[in-house]
View 1 (cartoon, rainbow, N blue to C red):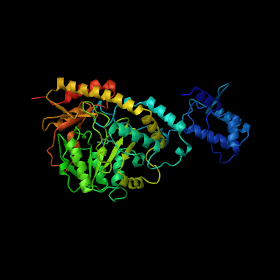
View 2 (tube, rainbow, N blue to C red; view 1 turned 135 degrees about the horizontal axis):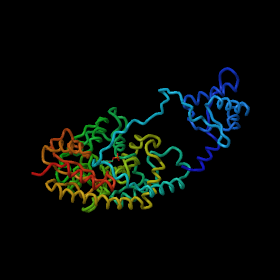
View 3 (cartoon, helix red, strand yellow; view 1 turned 90 degrees about the vertical axis):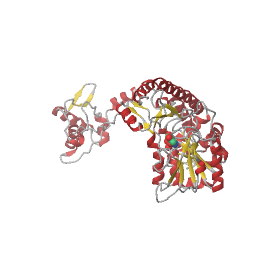
View 4 (spheres, rainbow, N blue to C red; view 1 turned 135 degrees about the vertical axis):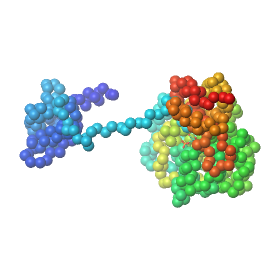
Amino acid sequence: MDESWVNSAERIGADLHLELSGPGGRRAALIRALREAVRSGRLAPGTRLPPYRSLAADLNVARNTVADAYAELVAEGWLTARQGSGTRVAERAEPLRHAARVPWKAPPRARGPRHDLRQGTPDASSFPRTAWLASYRRALQQAPNEVFGPGDPAGRVELREALTEYLARARGVRTEPGRIVICSGFAHALRLLFGQDRGGGGGVLRGPLAVEAYGLGFHRELLDTAGVRTVPLPLDERGAQVERLGRERAVLLTPAHQFPTGGPLDPARRAAVVDWARARGGVIVEDDYDGEFRYDRKPVGAVQGLDPERVIFVGSVSKSLSPALRLGWMVLPERYVDGVLAAKGEREAWVSVLDQLSLADFVSGGSYDRHVRRMRQRYRSRRDRLAAALAVHAPHVEVTGVAAGLHAVLRLPPGTERSTVKAAAWQGVALDGLAGFRHPDTAMAARDGLVVGYATPSEHAYEAALEALCGVLPPGE
Ligand SMILES: Cc1ncc(COP(=O)(O)O)c(C=O)c1O
């Protein structure tokens, strides 16, 4: 804490709110009010009271009135007065015990797992605090005054320009700032595209929507709430079987890295799904949730690059920086821009404009690239350590989906997934089983497996997490 602040607070004494009312004049009223403040605990033992002069000015009473009231309360034992240290609440002045005045205590927080290997979050300890702060400071210093007024729902143009350049270079996205709408992440994008509730308010797309047979349950629930029926597309080793698309109006895909099974969408299928959209007047929603993190294979560009008028490309910083920032972007075909802006509202109500400007600086100044490169190396090393540990301790467990992203899928013998997840929980290891990601209506045969997020533990906790994981895997034949 800033020393000078503490000292000056000490010197001037606490600011004090007192109501002077009741019979017997100002002096008696002040004594009653001060006594009550001490008795109730509002003034804690040891609190320094304001000097006569300032309290008298605050209350509009004579200085002597305050001096007399203090003296009376010193005599009664509520206050103490010492040369040079002013008048304070006596240490032994016991506050009245009253249930309503017991200081508020935070409810006990549920203790998290000892080892968190659930997919979902990047390594929080690697958030680039210094670089982000530098971007934030620059953004704040350079921001024109209008930034502090209501924000444009499209998002700040500085950010849309920075993203246009970055997404073209890093993800093969073809766009221009006028077709980008800033949002608070993929979940927000889904709400803007499909509306928020069954009433069908807002939104530019209607169901039924084809989705991958394995995907994030949270997104399915969100669509369900919006009244959108989802139709599962089976998956194989080449990704979603897009040749099965039928009457749906739209399809939601994770082409760079199928979530959660891993693996890119096969090039022939990428072309085929674009052909489907052109022939049927359909649209592809491309969820590029971790497209930056690729290790062993050639970069997989966005499907959006194949036909910007048929693909809605959505990305966010949730995997690359932090899901706490709630910052994302939608790259839209021209015909959807106005509808999405209308769904967003007249003013920016979701994403802090200062955060948008900070991200613009972070991206255009090269910090985003540097951070992604650093994290790519770190996650790659984690992925390698996971594979090495499994090769030694559980060679019978097949690891898939590891060429990219922040998670791997461990295939388990049929019928062992549930018991493994349960046994892991007993050992303090949090894991997701594949079953939780399976679309309830899919006819695809269920696979037993674990989705292991290797990004979440901090660097120093990772080795122990791997050891714990290997200890809970079912034994080989
Ligand atoms: C499949 C998938 N899509 C998108 C996201 C990003 O979601 P959001 O941007 O809403 O945080 C995630 C999680 O980070 C995800 O797992």
